[in-house]
Amino acid sequence: MLQKLAIKNYAIIDQLTIEPDGHLNTVTGETGAGKSIILGALSLILGERADTGVLINKSEKSVVEGYFDVHNNEAFKTAITAAELDFDDQCIIRREIAANGKSRAFINDTPVTLNTLNQLTSLLVDLHQQFDHTALEDNSFQMESLDAIAGTTAARLAYKELYSRYRKVKNELTGLKDKQAQWQKEADYKQFLLDELVQYSFKTDEIEQAAAQLKQLSHSERIVQILGNTRNLLEEGEQPFLNELKRMSHQLQSIGDIMPSLKPIQERLNSSWVELKDIAAELAAQEEQVNLDPQVMDELQQRVDIGYKLLKKHALNTTNELMELQQKLEEELEGTLNIGNAIERLTKEEEALYSDLLKDGTALSNSRKQAIPAFMARMNELLALVGMPNARFDVQLLQVAPSANGTDNVQFMLDANKSGNMQPVQKAASGGEMSRIMLCIKSMTAKALHMPTLIFDEVDTGISGEAARQVGALLKDLGQYHQVICITHQPQVAARGSRHFYVFKDADTTGKLTTNIRVLQQSERVLAIARMIGGEQPSDAAMLNAKELVDA
Figure 1: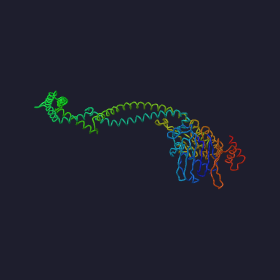
Figure 2 (figure 1 turned 120 degrees about the vertical axis):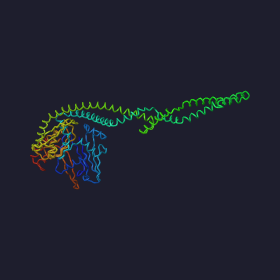
Figure 3 (figure 1 turned 90 degrees about the vertical axis):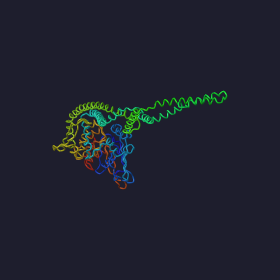
Figure 4 (figure 1 turned 60 degrees about the vertical axis):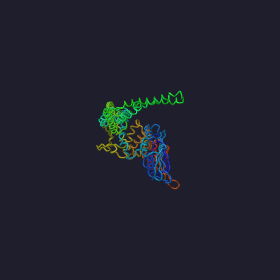
Protein backbone atom coordinates (compact mmCIF):
# COMPACT_ATOMS: atom_id res chain seq x y z
CA MET A 1 0.00 0.00 0.00
CA LEU A 2 1.23 3.48 -0.88
CA GLN A 3 1.51 5.44 2.36
CA LYS A 4 3.02 8.64 1.00
CA LEU A 5 4.17 10.15 -2.28
CA ALA A 6 6.52 13.15 -2.06
CA ILE A 7 7.44 15.16 -5.17
CA LYS A 8 10.01 17.96 -5.37
CA ASN A 9 11.04 20.14 -8.32
CA TYR A 10 9.18 18.18 -11.00
CA ALA A 11 7.60 20.08 -13.96
CA ILE A 12 5.37 22.76 -12.41
CA ILE A 13 5.38 21.01 -9.04
CA ASP A 14 7.58 22.86 -6.59
CA GLN A 15 6.88 20.52 -3.69
CA LEU A 16 3.86 18.44 -2.66
CA THR A 17 2.96 15.38 -0.61
CA ILE A 18 0.09 12.90 -1.02
CA GLU A 19 -0.95 10.49 1.73
CA PRO A 20 -3.74 8.22 0.44
CA ASP A 21 -5.73 5.91 2.68
CA GLY A 22 -6.08 2.17 2.16
CA HIS A 23 -9.38 2.30 0.24
CA LEU A 24 -10.70 4.38 -2.68
CA ASN A 25 -8.89 7.68 -3.16
CA THR A 26 -10.35 9.98 -5.81
CA VAL A 27 -8.34 12.76 -7.44
CA THR A 28 -10.08 15.65 -9.17
CA GLY A 29 -9.16 19.09 -10.50
CA GLU A 30 -9.52 21.34 -13.49
CA THR A 31 -8.06 20.23 -16.80
CA GLY A 32 -4.42 21.31 -16.87
CA ALA A 33 -4.19 21.60 -13.09
CA GLY A 34 -1.43 18.95 -13.03
CA LYS A 35 -3.07 15.57 -12.41
CA SER A 36 -1.16 13.97 -15.27
CA ILE A 37 2.04 15.59 -13.99
CA ILE A 38 1.57 13.85 -10.65
CA LEU A 39 1.12 10.56 -12.50
CA GLY A 40 4.27 11.30 -14.48
CA ALA A 41 6.20 11.78 -11.25
CA LEU A 42 4.77 8.54 -9.88
CA SER A 43 5.84 6.77 -13.07
CA LEU A 44 9.46 7.72 -12.32
CA ILE A 45 9.57 5.56 -9.21
CA LEU A 46 7.94 2.79 -11.24
CA GLY A 47 10.95 2.70 -13.56
CA GLU A 48 10.04 5.05 -16.40
CA ARG A 49 12.81 6.90 -18.24
CA ALA A 50 13.69 10.34 -16.87
CA ASP A 51 13.64 13.64 -18.78
CA THR A 52 15.63 16.68 -17.61
CA GLY A 53 12.92 18.85 -19.16
CA VAL A 54 10.84 18.27 -16.03
CA LEU A 55 13.25 20.28 -13.86
CA ILE A 56 11.89 23.68 -12.80
CA ASN A 57 14.93 24.84 -10.93
CA LYS A 58 18.01 23.73 -12.87
CA SER A 59 20.21 24.32 -9.84
CA GLU A 60 18.43 21.61 -7.84
CA LYS A 61 17.71 17.97 -8.56
CA SER A 62 14.22 16.57 -8.90
CA VAL A 63 13.29 14.01 -6.27
CA VAL A 64 10.28 11.67 -6.15
CA GLU A 65 9.83 9.38 -3.14
CA GLY A 66 7.23 6.73 -2.48
CA TYR A 67 6.72 5.13 0.93
CA PHE A 68 5.06 1.71 0.82
CA ASP A 69 3.72 -0.58 3.53
CA VAL A 70 4.85 -4.03 2.32
CA HIS A 71 4.62 -6.17 5.48
CA ASN A 72 1.88 -8.38 3.97
CA ASN A 73 3.24 -8.41 0.42
CA GLU A 74 4.85 -11.86 0.21
CA ALA A 75 5.51 -11.62 -3.53
CA PHE A 76 7.46 -8.39 -3.02
CA LYS A 77 9.36 -9.86 -0.08
CA THR A 78 10.41 -12.83 -2.20
CA ALA A 79 11.43 -10.62 -5.13
CA ILE A 80 13.41 -8.07 -3.11
CA THR A 81 15.23 -10.89 -1.30
CA ALA A 82 16.07 -12.50 -4.64
CA ALA A 83 17.45 -9.13 -5.76
CA GLU A 84 19.74 -9.21 -2.68
CA LEU A 85 18.23 -6.05 -1.21
CA ASP A 86 17.24 -5.42 2.40
CA PHE A 87 13.60 -6.03 3.29
CA ASP A 88 11.71 -3.97 5.83
CA ASP A 89 8.00 -3.56 6.56
CA GLN A 90 8.22 -0.11 4.99
CA CYS A 91 9.90 0.20 1.60
CA ILE A 92 11.12 3.60 0.38
CA ILE A 93 11.50 4.03 -3.38
CA ARG A 94 13.38 7.15 -4.49
CA ARG A 95 14.23 8.58 -7.89
CA GLU A 96 16.55 11.53 -8.43
CA ILE A 97 17.13 13.51 -11.62
CA ALA A 98 20.12 15.84 -11.74
CA ALA A 99 20.32 18.96 -13.92
CA ASN A 100 22.96 17.26 -16.09
CA GLY A 101 20.44 14.58 -17.06
CA LYS A 102 21.79 11.80 -14.87
CA SER A 103 19.14 9.79 -13.10
CA ARG A 104 19.52 7.52 -10.08
CA ALA A 105 17.11 5.09 -8.45
CA PHE A 106 17.15 3.78 -4.88
CA ILE A 107 15.29 1.12 -2.93
CA ASN A 108 15.70 1.55 0.82
CA ASP A 109 18.68 3.84 0.09
CA THR A 110 20.42 1.18 -2.01
CA PRO A 111 21.13 2.14 -5.66
CA VAL A 112 19.36 -0.09 -8.19
CA THR A 113 19.04 -0.30 -11.97
CA LEU A 114 15.87 0.80 -13.75
CA ASN A 115 15.22 -2.82 -14.70
CA THR A 116 15.31 -3.91 -11.05
CA LEU A 117 13.19 -0.90 -10.07
CA ASN A 118 10.59 -1.74 -12.70
CA GLN A 119 10.41 -5.40 -11.71
CA LEU A 120 10.02 -4.70 -8.00
CA THR A 121 7.59 -1.77 -8.21
CA SER A 122 5.32 -3.77 -10.51
CA LEU A 123 4.51 -5.72 -7.33
CA LEU A 124 3.64 -2.49 -5.51
CA VAL A 125 1.67 -0.40 -8.03
CA ASP A 126 -0.63 -1.39 -10.88
CA LEU A 127 -1.08 1.70 -13.05
CA HIS A 128 -3.96 1.62 -15.57
CA GLN A 129 -3.69 4.33 -18.16
CA GLN A 130 -5.46 4.60 -21.47
CA PHE A 131 -3.90 2.39 -24.14
CA ASP A 132 -2.05 0.40 -21.49
CA HIS A 133 -2.79 -3.21 -22.48
CA THR A 134 0.10 -4.81 -20.61
CA ALA A 135 -1.90 -6.74 -18.05
CA LEU A 136 -4.39 -8.21 -20.50
CA GLU A 137 -1.58 -9.23 -22.83
CA ASP A 138 -0.21 -11.31 -19.98
CA ASN A 139 -1.72 -14.78 -20.13
CA SER A 140 -0.85 -15.43 -16.48
CA PHE A 141 -3.05 -12.47 -15.38
CA GLN A 142 -5.98 -13.84 -17.35
CA MET A 143 -5.46 -17.28 -15.85
CA GLU A 144 -5.17 -15.88 -12.33
CA SER A 145 -8.39 -13.92 -12.84
CA LEU A 146 -10.27 -16.98 -14.11
CA ASP A 147 -9.00 -19.10 -11.23
CA ALA A 148 -9.96 -16.43 -8.71
CA ILE A 149 -13.52 -16.46 -10.06
CA ALA A 150 -13.64 -20.27 -10.35
CA GLY A 151 -12.21 -20.73 -6.86
CA THR A 152 -9.38 -22.82 -8.27
CA THR A 153 -6.42 -20.68 -7.19
CA ALA A 154 -5.31 -23.20 -4.55
CA ALA A 155 -5.70 -26.07 -7.03
CA ARG A 156 -3.62 -24.17 -9.61
CA LEU A 157 -0.86 -23.50 -7.09
CA ALA A 158 -0.81 -27.18 -6.10
CA TYR A 159 -0.71 -28.12 -9.78
CA LYS A 160 2.10 -25.61 -10.35
CA GLU A 161 4.15 -27.24 -7.60
CA LEU A 162 3.56 -30.65 -9.16
CA TYR A 163 4.54 -29.25 -12.56
CA SER A 164 7.72 -27.82 -11.05
CA ARG A 165 8.64 -31.28 -9.72
CA TYR A 166 7.87 -32.78 -13.13
CA ARG A 167 10.07 -30.24 -14.93
CA LYS A 168 12.89 -30.84 -12.47
CA VAL A 169 12.76 -34.60 -13.06
CA LYS A 170 12.41 -34.12 -16.83
CA ASN A 171 15.39 -31.76 -16.98
CA GLU A 172 17.46 -34.15 -14.87
CA LEU A 173 16.46 -37.04 -17.13
CA THR A 174 17.33 -35.07 -20.27
CA GLY A 175 20.71 -34.19 -18.80
CA LEU A 176 21.44 -37.83 -17.98
CA LYS A 177 20.38 -38.99 -21.46
CA ASP A 178 22.64 -36.40 -23.06
CA LYS A 179 25.43 -37.50 -20.78
CA GLN A 180 24.78 -41.13 -21.60
CA ALA A 181 24.81 -40.40 -25.34
CA GLN A 182 28.11 -38.59 -24.99
CA TRP A 183 29.56 -41.38 -22.89
CA GLN A 184 28.29 -43.97 -25.35
CA LYS A 185 30.24 -42.29 -28.15
CA GLU A 186 33.40 -42.70 -26.10
CA ALA A 187 32.56 -46.01 -24.43
CA ASP A 188 33.96 -48.30 -27.13
CA TYR A 189 37.24 -46.43 -27.29
CA LYS A 190 37.51 -46.30 -23.49
CA GLN A 191 36.82 -50.04 -23.34
CA PHE A 192 39.60 -50.63 -25.88
CA LEU A 193 42.02 -48.58 -23.79
CA LEU A 194 40.99 -50.42 -20.64
CA ASP A 195 41.31 -53.84 -22.26
CA GLU A 196 44.81 -52.94 -23.42
CA LEU A 197 45.85 -51.88 -19.93
CA VAL A 198 44.24 -54.95 -18.34
CA GLN A 199 45.98 -57.19 -20.90
CA TYR A 200 49.44 -56.09 -19.76
CA SER A 201 48.48 -55.55 -16.08
CA PHE A 202 51.49 -53.60 -14.96
CA LYS A 203 52.34 -53.67 -11.29
CA THR A 204 53.54 -50.81 -9.10
CA ASP A 205 56.79 -49.28 -10.47
CA GLU A 206 57.20 -52.26 -12.83
CA ILE A 207 58.35 -50.37 -15.93
CA GLU A 208 60.96 -48.41 -13.98
CA GLN A 209 62.26 -51.52 -12.22
CA ALA A 210 62.35 -53.53 -15.46
CA ALA A 211 64.25 -50.75 -17.22
CA ALA A 212 66.80 -50.68 -14.42
CA GLN A 213 67.14 -54.47 -14.49
CA LEU A 214 67.51 -54.48 -18.27
CA LYS A 215 70.25 -51.89 -18.06
CA GLN A 216 72.05 -54.12 -15.58
CA LEU A 217 71.63 -57.23 -17.73
CA SER A 218 73.01 -55.46 -20.77
CA HIS A 219 76.36 -55.23 -18.88
CA SER A 220 76.12 -58.66 -17.24
CA GLU A 221 79.31 -60.16 -18.81
CA ARG A 222 81.45 -57.26 -17.67
CA ILE A 223 79.81 -57.33 -14.23
CA VAL A 224 80.50 -61.07 -13.86
CA GLN A 225 84.11 -60.60 -14.98
CA ILE A 226 84.80 -57.80 -12.50
CA LEU A 227 83.07 -59.58 -9.65
CA GLY A 228 84.99 -62.79 -10.44
CA ASN A 229 88.34 -61.04 -10.70
CA THR A 230 87.82 -59.23 -7.44
CA ARG A 231 86.75 -62.37 -5.60
CA ASN A 232 89.65 -64.28 -7.19
CA LEU A 233 92.18 -61.77 -5.87
CA LEU A 234 90.75 -62.14 -2.41
CA GLU A 235 90.29 -65.91 -2.18
CA GLU A 236 91.97 -67.70 -5.08
CA GLY A 237 94.89 -67.10 -7.39
CA GLU A 238 98.54 -67.91 -6.78
CA GLN A 239 98.73 -65.75 -3.68
CA PRO A 240 95.16 -65.03 -2.37
CA PHE A 241 95.08 -61.71 -0.59
CA LEU A 242 93.09 -63.16 2.30
CA ASN A 243 95.74 -65.83 2.89
CA GLU A 244 98.49 -63.24 2.85
CA LEU A 245 96.55 -61.10 5.27
CA LYS A 246 96.02 -64.06 7.54
CA ARG A 247 99.72 -64.86 7.42
CA MET A 248 100.67 -61.27 8.34
CA SER A 249 98.24 -61.36 11.26
CA HIS A 250 99.83 -64.58 12.58
CA GLN A 251 103.35 -63.12 12.30
CA LEU A 252 102.40 -60.02 14.28
CA GLN A 253 100.74 -62.19 16.86
CA SER A 254 103.95 -64.22 17.27
CA ILE A 255 105.87 -61.19 18.46
CA GLY A 256 103.02 -59.79 20.51
CA ASP A 257 104.57 -61.00 23.77
CA ILE A 258 107.86 -59.25 22.91
CA MET A 259 106.24 -56.03 21.75
CA PRO A 260 102.80 -55.58 23.38
CA SER A 261 102.15 -52.30 21.49
CA LEU A 262 101.66 -54.32 18.29
CA LYS A 263 98.62 -56.11 19.65
CA PRO A 264 96.07 -53.39 18.58
CA ILE A 265 97.56 -53.39 15.07
CA GLN A 266 97.32 -57.17 14.91
CA GLU A 267 93.68 -57.02 16.02
CA ARG A 268 92.88 -54.41 13.36
CA LEU A 269 94.57 -56.55 10.74
CA ASN A 270 92.56 -59.52 11.86
CA SER A 271 89.33 -57.46 11.69
CA SER A 272 90.23 -56.43 8.14
CA TRP A 273 90.68 -60.08 7.24
CA VAL A 274 87.20 -60.88 8.62
CA GLU A 275 85.64 -57.92 6.73
CA LEU A 276 87.32 -58.81 3.43
CA LYS A 277 86.32 -62.45 3.78
CA ASP A 278 82.76 -61.24 4.21
CA ILE A 279 83.08 -59.05 1.10
CA ALA A 280 84.35 -62.01 -0.87
CA ALA A 281 81.28 -64.00 0.15
CA GLU A 282 78.95 -61.16 -0.94
CA LEU A 283 80.74 -60.82 -4.26
CA ALA A 284 80.15 -64.53 -4.84
CA ALA A 285 76.46 -64.09 -4.04
CA GLN A 286 76.15 -61.09 -6.39
CA GLU A 287 77.89 -63.00 -9.12
CA GLU A 288 75.39 -65.85 -8.82
CA GLN A 289 72.48 -63.35 -9.15
CA VAL A 290 73.66 -61.95 -12.45
CA ASN A 291 71.50 -63.57 -15.13
CA LEU A 292 73.17 -64.23 -18.44
CA ASP A 293 70.05 -65.83 -19.98
CA PRO A 294 69.25 -64.00 -23.30
CA GLN A 295 65.60 -65.06 -23.06
CA VAL A 296 65.16 -63.16 -19.79
CA MET A 297 66.66 -60.07 -21.42
CA ASP A 298 64.28 -60.42 -24.38
CA GLU A 299 61.28 -60.71 -22.06
CA LEU A 300 62.34 -57.64 -20.07
CA GLN A 301 63.00 -55.69 -23.27
CA GLN A 302 59.52 -56.49 -24.58
CA ARG A 303 57.96 -55.49 -21.28
CA VAL A 304 59.82 -52.19 -21.19
CA ASP A 305 59.02 -51.45 -24.84
CA ILE A 306 55.30 -52.03 -24.24
CA GLY A 307 55.38 -49.91 -21.11
CA TYR A 308 57.11 -46.97 -22.81
CA LYS A 309 54.69 -47.21 -25.75
CA LEU A 310 51.68 -46.97 -23.41
CA LEU A 311 53.23 -44.11 -21.46
CA LYS A 312 53.79 -42.17 -24.67
CA LYS A 313 50.31 -43.01 -25.96
CA HIS A 314 48.62 -41.61 -22.85
CA ALA A 315 51.14 -38.80 -22.28
CA LEU A 316 52.11 -40.22 -18.89
CA ASN A 317 55.42 -40.60 -17.11
CA THR A 318 55.24 -43.51 -14.66
CA THR A 319 53.81 -47.00 -14.24
CA ASN A 320 51.70 -45.78 -11.33
CA GLU A 321 50.06 -43.15 -13.54
CA LEU A 322 49.13 -45.90 -16.00
CA MET A 323 47.54 -47.86 -13.15
CA GLU A 324 45.58 -44.74 -12.06
CA LEU A 325 44.34 -44.33 -15.64
CA GLN A 326 43.21 -47.95 -15.67
CA GLN A 327 41.25 -47.43 -12.45
CA LYS A 328 39.69 -44.22 -13.84
CA LEU A 329 38.58 -45.98 -17.03
CA GLU A 330 37.05 -48.80 -14.97
CA GLU A 331 35.09 -46.26 -12.87
CA GLU A 332 33.87 -44.35 -15.94
CA LEU A 333 32.68 -47.47 -17.68
CA GLU A 334 31.00 -48.59 -14.49
CA GLY A 335 29.40 -45.13 -14.35
CA THR A 336 27.91 -45.76 -17.78
CA LEU A 337 26.07 -48.73 -16.31
CA ASN A 338 24.99 -46.73 -13.26
CA ILE A 339 23.65 -43.88 -15.40
CA GLY A 340 21.52 -46.39 -17.24
CA ASN A 341 19.93 -47.44 -13.95
CA ALA A 342 19.34 -43.78 -13.01
CA ILE A 343 17.71 -43.12 -16.38
CA GLU A 344 15.41 -46.06 -15.92
CA ARG A 345 14.40 -44.84 -12.46
CA LEU A 346 13.82 -41.23 -13.59
CA THR A 347 11.87 -42.37 -16.65
CA LYS A 348 9.41 -44.18 -14.42
CA GLU A 349 9.19 -41.15 -12.10
CA GLU A 350 8.63 -38.80 -15.05
CA GLU A 351 5.84 -40.99 -16.43
CA ALA A 352 4.13 -41.13 -13.04
CA LEU A 353 4.34 -37.34 -12.58
CA TYR A 354 3.07 -36.70 -16.12
CA SER A 355 0.13 -38.98 -15.45
CA ASP A 356 -0.64 -37.01 -12.27
CA LEU A 357 -0.33 -33.75 -14.24
CA LEU A 358 -2.86 -34.93 -16.80
CA LYS A 359 -5.22 -36.07 -14.06
CA ASP A 360 -4.96 -32.89 -11.97
CA GLY A 361 -4.90 -30.70 -15.09
CA THR A 362 -8.12 -32.25 -16.35
CA ALA A 363 -9.82 -31.70 -12.99
CA LEU A 364 -8.59 -28.10 -12.93
CA SER A 365 -9.76 -27.54 -16.49
CA ASN A 366 -13.22 -28.94 -15.74
CA SER A 367 -13.61 -26.59 -12.77
CA ARG A 368 -12.60 -23.63 -14.93
CA LYS A 369 -15.06 -24.62 -17.65
CA GLN A 370 -17.87 -24.78 -15.14
CA ALA A 371 -17.12 -21.25 -13.95
CA ILE A 372 -16.82 -19.66 -17.40
CA PRO A 373 -20.56 -19.25 -18.24
CA ALA A 374 -21.26 -17.36 -15.00
CA PHE A 375 -18.09 -15.31 -15.44
CA MET A 376 -19.07 -14.31 -18.97
CA ALA A 377 -22.63 -13.48 -17.95
CA ARG A 378 -21.49 -11.28 -15.05
CA MET A 379 -18.84 -9.55 -17.19
CA ASN A 380 -21.38 -8.74 -19.91
CA GLU A 381 -23.74 -7.43 -17.24
CA LEU A 382 -21.02 -5.22 -15.74
CA LEU A 383 -19.85 -3.98 -19.14
CA ALA A 384 -23.39 -2.84 -19.94
CA LEU A 385 -23.55 -1.02 -16.60
CA VAL A 386 -20.26 0.83 -17.19
CA GLY A 387 -21.26 2.15 -20.59
CA MET A 388 -20.46 -0.75 -22.93
CA PRO A 389 -23.96 -2.17 -23.65
CA ASN A 390 -23.03 -3.47 -27.10
CA ALA A 391 -19.96 -5.32 -25.94
CA ARG A 392 -19.86 -9.08 -25.72
CA PHE A 393 -17.24 -10.72 -23.54
CA ASP A 394 -16.15 -14.31 -24.03
CA VAL A 395 -13.57 -16.66 -22.53
CA GLN A 396 -11.76 -19.18 -24.71
CA LEU A 397 -10.18 -22.13 -22.98
CA LEU A 398 -7.88 -24.08 -25.28
CA GLN A 399 -6.44 -27.46 -24.43
CA VAL A 400 -2.64 -27.51 -24.48
CA ALA A 401 0.14 -29.75 -23.24
CA PRO A 402 0.70 -29.53 -19.49
CA SER A 403 2.32 -26.22 -18.53
CA ALA A 404 2.80 -24.25 -15.33
CA ASN A 405 -0.87 -23.19 -15.15
CA GLY A 406 -2.47 -26.47 -16.15
CA THR A 407 -3.55 -28.05 -19.41
CA ASP A 408 -5.38 -24.91 -20.55
CA ASN A 409 -4.54 -21.70 -22.32
CA VAL A 410 -7.02 -18.92 -21.56
CA GLN A 411 -7.81 -15.94 -23.76
CA PHE A 412 -10.30 -13.18 -22.96
CA MET A 413 -12.19 -12.22 -26.12
CA LEU A 414 -14.34 -9.18 -26.94
CA ASP A 415 -16.74 -8.03 -29.60
CA ALA A 416 -17.07 -4.33 -28.78
CA ASN A 417 -19.99 -3.52 -31.13
CA LYS A 418 -22.00 -6.68 -31.84
CA SER A 419 -20.07 -7.16 -35.06
CA GLY A 420 -19.94 -10.90 -34.67
CA ASN A 421 -16.15 -10.70 -34.76
CA MET A 422 -14.55 -11.79 -31.52
CA GLN A 423 -10.96 -10.66 -30.97
CA PRO A 424 -8.52 -10.77 -28.07
CA VAL A 425 -9.54 -8.05 -25.62
CA GLN A 426 -6.31 -6.08 -26.02
CA LYS A 427 -6.99 -5.77 -29.78
CA ALA A 428 -10.71 -5.13 -29.68
CA ALA A 429 -11.00 -2.51 -26.92
CA SER A 430 -10.13 1.18 -26.99
CA GLY A 431 -8.05 2.76 -24.24
CA GLY A 432 -11.05 3.90 -22.19
CA GLU A 433 -12.84 0.59 -22.73
CA MET A 434 -9.74 -1.29 -21.67
CA SER A 435 -9.63 0.51 -18.33
CA ARG A 436 -13.30 -0.28 -17.68
CA ILE A 437 -12.83 -3.93 -18.67
CA MET A 438 -9.92 -4.16 -16.22
CA LEU A 439 -12.06 -2.52 -13.56
CA CYS A 440 -14.84 -5.06 -14.10
CA ILE A 441 -12.42 -8.00 -13.99
CA LYS A 442 -10.67 -6.76 -10.88
CA SER A 443 -13.93 -5.98 -9.10
CA MET A 444 -14.92 -9.64 -9.60
CA THR A 445 -11.59 -10.97 -8.35
CA ALA A 446 -11.03 -8.45 -5.55
CA LYS A 447 -11.75 -10.85 -2.71
CA ALA A 448 -9.63 -13.70 -4.05
CA LEU A 449 -6.50 -12.00 -5.43
CA HIS A 450 -3.79 -10.05 -3.68
CA MET A 451 -3.26 -6.89 -5.70
CA PRO A 452 -0.84 -4.00 -5.39
CA THR A 453 -2.05 -0.39 -5.25
CA LEU A 454 -4.41 0.08 -8.20
CA ILE A 455 -4.30 3.40 -10.02
CA PHE A 456 -6.93 4.22 -12.65
CA ASP A 457 -6.32 7.23 -14.86
CA GLU A 458 -9.68 8.56 -16.11
CA VAL A 459 -11.32 5.13 -16.22
CA ASP A 460 -14.61 7.00 -16.73
CA THR A 461 -13.62 8.74 -19.97
CA GLY A 462 -16.51 8.85 -22.44
CA ILE A 463 -19.26 7.90 -20.01
CA SER A 464 -21.70 9.75 -17.75
CA GLY A 465 -24.94 9.29 -15.89
CA GLU A 466 -25.75 5.75 -14.80
CA ALA A 467 -22.61 4.29 -16.37
CA ALA A 468 -20.45 6.69 -14.38
CA ARG A 469 -22.40 5.82 -11.23
CA GLN A 470 -21.77 2.13 -11.80
CA VAL A 471 -18.05 2.75 -12.36
CA GLY A 472 -18.00 4.61 -9.06
CA ALA A 473 -19.77 1.73 -7.33
CA LEU A 474 -17.28 -0.81 -8.71
CA LEU A 475 -14.36 1.33 -7.62
CA LYS A 476 -15.90 1.72 -4.17
CA ASP A 477 -16.34 -2.06 -3.84
CA LEU A 478 -12.79 -2.64 -5.08
CA GLY A 479 -11.56 -0.15 -2.48
CA GLN A 480 -12.98 -2.34 0.29
CA TYR A 481 -10.25 -4.92 -0.41
CA HIS A 482 -7.41 -2.96 -2.03
CA GLN A 483 -5.95 0.51 -2.13
CA VAL A 484 -7.32 2.31 -5.20
CA ILE A 485 -6.38 5.72 -6.55
CA CYS A 486 -8.60 7.06 -9.32
CA ILE A 487 -8.17 10.26 -11.32
CA THR A 488 -11.64 11.25 -12.48
CA HIS A 489 -13.77 14.00 -14.05
CA GLN A 490 -17.05 12.35 -13.09
CA PRO A 491 -18.88 13.56 -9.96
CA GLN A 492 -20.49 10.12 -9.54
CA VAL A 493 -17.01 8.61 -9.22
CA ALA A 494 -15.42 11.42 -7.19
CA ALA A 495 -18.16 11.20 -4.56
CA ARG A 496 -17.39 7.52 -3.89
CA GLY A 497 -13.90 8.12 -2.57
CA SER A 498 -13.12 7.54 1.08
CA ARG A 499 -10.53 10.30 0.61
CA HIS A 500 -10.87 13.05 -1.96
CA PHE A 501 -7.78 14.89 -3.29
CA TYR A 502 -8.09 18.15 -5.18
CA VAL A 503 -5.35 19.22 -7.58
CA PHE A 504 -5.03 22.92 -8.32
CA LYS A 505 -2.64 25.56 -9.58
CA ASP A 506 -1.48 28.29 -7.25
CA ALA A 507 0.45 31.50 -8.03
CA ASP A 508 3.16 32.81 -5.74
CA THR A 509 4.05 36.48 -5.16
CA THR A 510 6.00 36.58 -8.44
CA GLY A 511 3.07 35.21 -10.40
CA LYS A 512 4.74 31.83 -10.94
CA LEU A 513 2.21 28.95 -11.18
CA THR A 514 2.80 25.68 -9.36
CA THR A 515 0.72 22.55 -8.93
CA ASN A 516 -0.52 21.68 -5.44
CA ILE A 517 -2.81 19.11 -3.94
CA ARG A 518 -4.86 18.89 -0.78
CA VAL A 519 -7.40 16.61 0.89
CA LEU A 520 -10.94 18.02 0.78
CA GLN A 521 -13.06 18.08 3.89
CA GLN A 522 -16.72 17.02 3.69
CA SER A 523 -18.13 20.48 3.00
CA GLU A 524 -15.37 21.18 0.48
CA ARG A 525 -16.13 17.95 -1.31
CA VAL A 526 -19.76 18.94 -1.81
CA LEU A 527 -18.72 22.25 -3.40
CA ALA A 528 -16.04 20.61 -5.56
CA ILE A 529 -18.47 17.96 -6.83
CA ALA A 530 -21.18 20.57 -7.38
CA ARG A 531 -18.74 22.49 -9.59
CA MET A 532 -18.06 19.27 -11.52
CA ILE A 533 -21.85 19.09 -12.08
CA GLY A 534 -22.81 22.74 -12.67
CA GLY A 535 -19.67 24.75 -13.36
CA GLU A 536 -17.71 27.30 -11.32
CA GLN A 537 -20.92 28.86 -9.91
CA PRO A 538 -23.08 25.80 -9.17
CA SER A 539 -26.81 26.19 -8.73
CA ASP A 540 -28.73 25.12 -5.67
CA ALA A 541 -29.84 22.04 -7.55
CA ALA A 542 -26.23 21.16 -8.32
CA MET A 543 -25.28 21.67 -4.68
CA LEU A 544 -28.16 19.44 -3.58
CA ASN A 545 -27.21 16.77 -6.11
CA ALA A 546 -23.59 16.93 -4.97
CA LYS A 547 -24.60 16.56 -1.31
CA GLU A 548 -26.73 13.54 -2.15
CA LEU A 549 -23.83 11.95 -4.00
CA VAL A 550 -21.40 12.54 -1.13
CA ASP A 551 -23.88 11.39 1.54
CA ALA A 552 -24.62 8.26 -0.47
